[in-house]
Image (cartoon, rainbow, N blue to C red):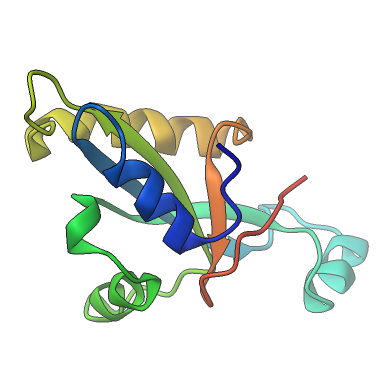
Length: 134
C-alpha cells in the first residue's frame, strides 16, 4: 500500500488483520553540536540541521484519527517539535499490543533516529504533511 497522507496511514492501520498500535517519535530540528557558519546559514534557510527526538507516544489508531489531535496533545507538554516519525506494531490474537510493549520499540526508534537510520519510518511535518527526509 502506498500511503500519501495521514488519513491513509490511519485507514491502513485499521484495515490490518491484527490490531495495530502506532508509535510516534516527535523530533525538533536544531543545529548540530560544533556547527559551522555554513551549517548555520543553511539552517536559517530551513535546510540541514539535525533532528533530535523530544517526545515519544504510542496510540491506537482510533485515538489519533486526525493529525491535529496529535499536535494538540503534544502542545500540552510545552515541547516544540518539527517532525513526527511514525511506525506501527502489530497485535496478536485479535488484541492490540499493550502500551508497555511499545516502550522498547519507541526507544529503538529514538536510537535509530539519532543514528540517522530513518528510512523505515513515515515522516510528517507539524502541519500533517507527509515529507521525505534525506
